[in-house]
Length: 573
Image (tube, rainbow, N blue to C red; front, side, top):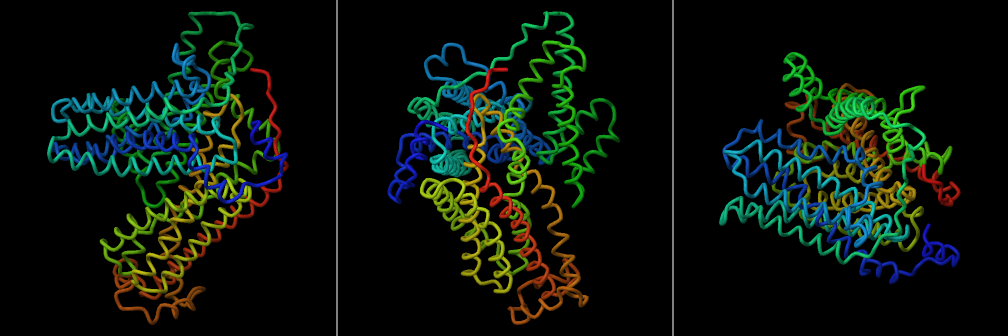
């Protein structure tokens, strides 16, 4: 806790409404807006927008899909976050400080990477463009690590909500710019020039870095290996083996997190195992059980990484010491500070937004209800975006005005309540006003709870491990949701079949008897049930998703009762 937050705690007073709103006009929040823009711009440029350029150049959809792996680095960034915590940038760190020096270097490299992409013809040098895209993805993911760390270290806990909100606003603006401007410019000046212009827009982030205040003094945890005698030949071989295992584990883990087995299958094919490659692809893409193969990949990859970093039993070596401390110390620090409560806190992170993550069948739901694609697009992309921005802002305001823990508890209710609004929507038929209400409430609730969770995870990091611990938390929080969401469709159709056969949910069919004929009109054709039964199935699913949110509510109240953690400054390992 910083001096500022300690003073606030001793005073015992919460800021007033105007004070809570004024935090958005502070220098740090405005800087965060520009850094959010710098974070969101390259993400879309190497993924969705680049796919449009590749298709325009006549490339196949299979090749284009492979380019999506350029964003794999975003799923694996916690693996090199310890390097960002511990390494300094020569010369620049003394000028800008630890975090801002890393940000500036990353942004310069992103500009360079986008310029290189802009100077490449995919029809002639596809491999070179792929290399540049992977470079931008890796450096951009590294930039995200540093931006998160600076945000946490540059502001007290009470202002983390506003910082997170400003970041998300900047990120969303960048996504709109990166998704619209290059396509429009390409019609007049071509793709190469449009990407060169996008590279120049990264200067928004550079200006943000130069205008940002220094973060709190960063403590670098040194790794002491002086008690282990150097053995260059042995250490060189050990480094090669450990790093090879580390990369292998990272690829398996990343393929599981990304839900894409292209790298694994490609590697097996190169090794002369086409049958195994086809089997992995089939397991990864199977519906709905493929997600279990993906989660298994995450677990197997994590085990391989653990073995690669674990010191050899009974043998002290420098590679084992360096990797073991770099990856193990952040976890040890977290469990040391929170003790028996650590498991409860991690459980809350995993389930806090579970009720949101299971809503992976919303577009089919809207179409089944009888809404047109244009109506869905207008409400989701326009009204939904506006309400999401509002929800993010409300989350930041609530944290500043009422405190992080109170806002966190309120946010835990947001997801379940918004899911019950969708259960109500199912009974209304294709009414545009009802769709607008449901999507509006959902986006406000999602924005609010998302901001609260970001601020809470930020508050959990320890001095010297900010980047690593936050990267781990942000990689962890969606994993359980991915697993549970794989069963959403089965729950809807299973409940619908039970309703049609006179089972447990048959009484719900009466709620859908008076709906217009176009509502769930294709139920028999697509799901083999009556329209009223499909409506009942969706209602059961939304109630089930709300009940999942109750777990998060209970855990949020339990966490709220925990005593505050008083930071200590431990000796460097």
